[in-house]
Length: 101
Image 1 (cartoon, one colour):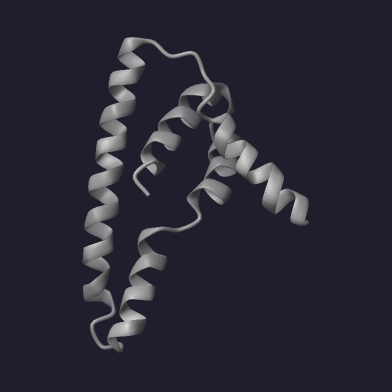
Image 2 (image 1 turned 30 degrees about the vertical axis):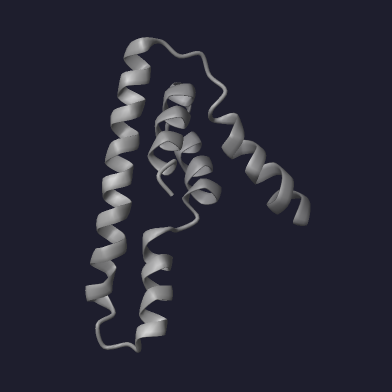
């Protein structure tokens, strides 16, 4: 199990960046990266409102848990299983979305 956690899953995340790319795909990737950065910033600050009744030290921890899930470890395999015919594009764009965190 530790081999999967420490070797296979990070390798899958790194493999998603190893694709041939052209200028239109690069432009789309930067737009997706910008959208990801905006999304994670909004969710980080917006999550403070979900936990307004909790103590301040716990509020910060819960905000990070909401904003930064383990999308690289669980999201990539789910996307690959769902959209297997567009494997390279899905991995590239989902990786660029996650670059922000």
